[in-house]
Amino acid sequence: MRRGFTMIELIFVIVILGILAAVAIPKLAATRDDAKISKLSANVSTLVSDAAAYYTSQGQTNWSSANTKWQDVTNVELYTDQTGSTSAKTTQVAPSTVYIVAEPGGTANSDCFKIVTTADGNLTVDTNGTATSNSVCAGAQQLAADLIKKHTFGGRRIAR
Image 1 (tube, rainbow, N blue to C red):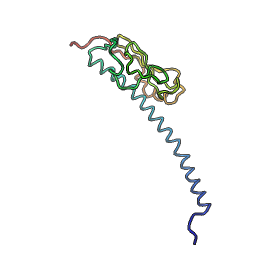
Image 2: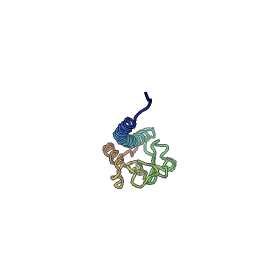
Image 3: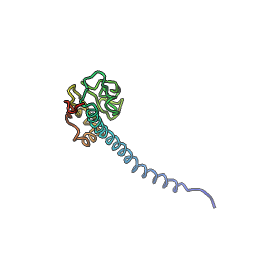
Image 4: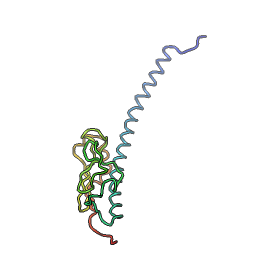
């Protein structure tokens, strides 16, 4: 009696492993995209919530102050350019335009959301038309559709 596998048995094992890999690999790629979509839409939601919390804690949106930086308002990764290569942490909040991107340091096609602030307390979440060909951005924009609008935090409503 000889021990070991025949050539046909080895070929069958290799074919079965190839079929399993062909089924599993596309599922893994789709799972990564779904995670990126969820992260981007959660970042937009967090940014709006953080801006509202900042407004509530300050009694006004004092964004026109030169001392108010994005790192004081939120921990969401924001970028000053559409490629996501320059962080906006130390950028003055208003007036400014910042971006939430799918792939930081990527191409101009990865900027999914454009955030525009004004000194009077408005924060506008908008989509950038160049990112519509990116499936991750398109999915995130669809998921966060109710947040893509002008959010007004201006005025003095809380007396100190």
